[in-house]
Length: 415
Ligand SMILES: Cc1ncc(COP(=O)(O)O)c(C=O)c1O
Image 1 (cartoon, rainbow, N blue to C red):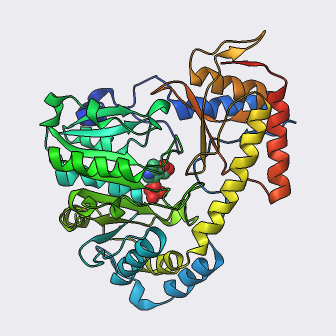
Image 2: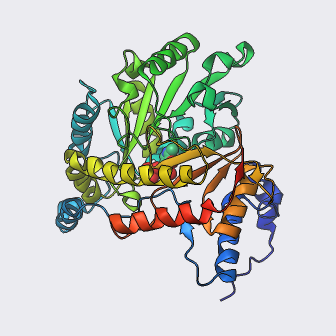
């Protein structure tokens, strides 16, 4: 078997949205590939040193045993074997209960206002199919998760970036959207708690979003992939704000808050019109998640101790990480939500290198300190540390954090 890609006329007929005839010929190396290569080189050069990987954005542990045993039982039942189409009612009912018990969102109709999805990512990919015509605009926060914007562009729409700045609490400035763009603006994508900044929204911000959406006839897509993971205040939902269920949807995922990343289970909740349009599109894209997984999802959503226990672990690790970074001269803070710590990248090291971008700093961290984090240069130079690194219990977590403090402590950073 050869792994080489053979030349053929297929190269000349690729769609423009993926680069047309140039598809696959791009020689630029992208951020995550650069990180991968730097990690490989650092490990080869320092085989005896542990590489501390704080770059991975997914849970380090399995789903909880009650959820796994529910899947085992449901997978054995013949009635769960077939196409799930737009989902089983039991999962939608559990999602409505979860929204009320976890976020205080009362009165969602589990028949018309909730639909399952095979993860938040495909739901975000499908939403533009329901709203975007060529020339329409989606506004998205940056840095961020670009899937909704990518598909908007695939459909001939445009993406408008709203920078997340520290001075605004990493909330977008909706007033900055120019008047001339508003006529074509159809969708607003936001994500709180936010990846990568770790910021949480406020009720006042969500109220502003609802007013903005109504005034400008825009649908709001609030990506709540990290909604269960908060370090200050209570978990909150956009749908708890008056008018939210008229202007948009919130997308919840079991990937992060329930350690069910590979299971692929999420739900879209909110406006019945938007949910119905999403369901119509989805019905033409997939045939639903395995029913046994949806039923195990019921067990997961009904057990509120799962997100609580997961959250406790990340909160503990985030505190340790802040102590380790601050002992090395940084001014890191525990984020309001998510398992990410986002902090300004230094400009250099006294008597050492200078960093013109966050990417320069992260490459140096991997090469010289064998600590991997993800750089973001979209709105200032920042790096993101994820506390989903592998550790075998609390003592091991402390050991890893102590090691970070020691490795960085010898450098005097310039900010
Ligand atoms: C902001 C955000 N939204 C959505 C997702 C995807 O979630 P899912 O696993 O449900 O597809 C991620 C995953 O990293 C994410 O960070």
